[in-house]
Image (tube, rainbow, N blue to C red; front, top):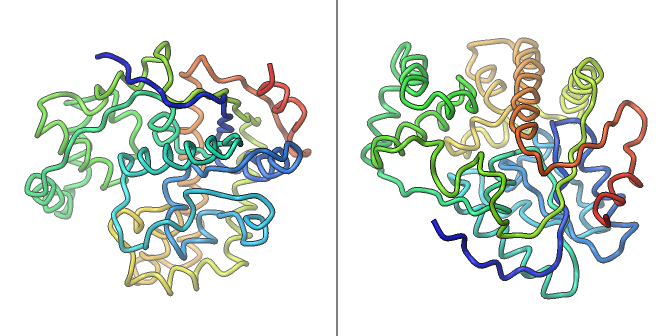
Length: 312
């Protein structure tokens, strides 16, 4: 496949890493210090209006201090996907660059980051195939059977997808069914790290010792509870698309709202699922040799080290 020609000329920055490592606060500090930087969210759920607390979205005050892009661009009833995100994020970066500024891409959704910066091509959709798969997944043991099928058909894709994420599992099997190719094989390849980037970018990753990160995740979830996450989910419950309803925090509290688990159990599950998600994020990003890693702990993140990586 011939790499597509990039229209971008500036070198932008992607600040990535597991959830709760302090990316958002560091990005805001970096943008304010540099002055010519705008932030582009690389979070697959912050696109949804109203999903504020559970996605740890930048506040209105923070967005007034530094322009943020790809936040609140879709209704929670919409089924957002990575192909749409790729198109809109690149358009936002092009607009930032055209105004003589640089983009700071921030987030922990590895596929979304790579979809924007690298030459990944996403296959089409087949509503009939997807509906059949969704019906299968909705049956007793259907989700487990579908995940087992994905493990047999595409072990690499299965290793990167949460076994409880019905939407991603269905999408992977849909692509395999309509193309006959592994879901993990599209574009220049998720693991083809030597390819030329579509968006020139320096990638800096924040890393934290696992016990410290686990503690921060628990504290973050507790803060979300205190800020009113239960009420937020109640307000949105009847408006959430199948995609939005899979978001960490929302899926568990929807189950509590339906009476299948208690609210306390839901928050315990949110902590556990977030920790599993953080491990998957680390595994995803650790495979990419282009990332420059900056270790952080409970102290403020090392802004100078991140900025030095961008300028070097």
